[in-house]
Length: 355
Image 1 (spheres, rainbow, N blue to C red):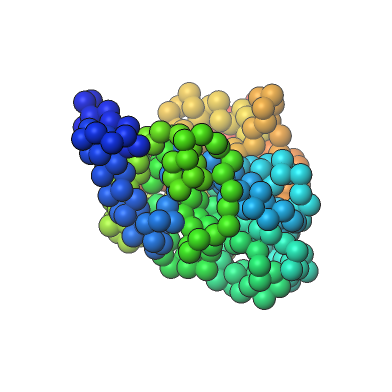
Image 2: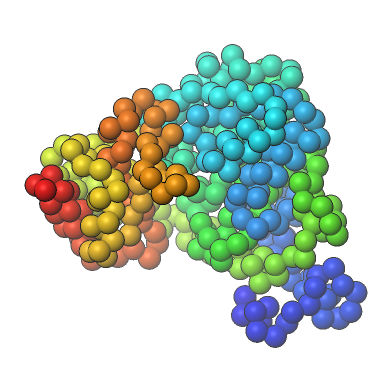
């Protein structure tokens, strides 16, 4: 990224040699990202991040063909809120206690009028992985004209997108979840899905996303995607071992701790825990003071803690949902950091229970 941040500032839409160099960098990055995702380069639309990619998939599909939208009850707000804002009928497919989509219920929500089905590949809070191939078969059978979108933002660093999203028409990814820069993402399309622009202006990105391209971000996104793909197998094994050790250590030292969805396939770096008798907000403050960065996935715009819609959709009661904690590990996480967190989290829980 450095050359495009420190001295090469050409606009890829220009005609002079500086602009052509920037355009070449964008085109090369488009080719490289397309190879990682498994689509033709022409199917890559660069965006400002995962949220815009999700919004373009949902609102762009609806603008091209208005009709009902089917989403799961555990979708990211970038999908759920876009669907609601579209003004079209939103049909919400339930999940089971592990956060997996109920395929029979999904089938009953589908018909020839449905314009888009959006199912997150892996959940942003629990890390639970959906079976997209099975879901796609239901969609093709019951809603053959619908576009099938998957938000792969959380999954992209850990899963082979070429295999995992082979049945999806539209796939959203984001740079910072891949170890790349913030403020860059992409919507990848198979074939030529029917979409209309939701941003209007100069007609960049196949006239589907106007705005001067973020050349440095695009270059960084492609490089990060390739690096994640190259290291995925080894990183996944190593991170899963550390994740399982951390979860076991915390459960063993903190009575009343429940690990969410531990019996189903999850991303290697995700741990989602619930602790009886405490509130997430207080726990996060103690952990932050101690040097452990964590989240609860349960904040609203006012700053007050609210139960996670994902957990409520999984049948977790409100009190239990307000005691949740999400910890994530990555390729750079060390055994020493895991051992540190394994001490700090139970100690913080015990401190709150004793208060």
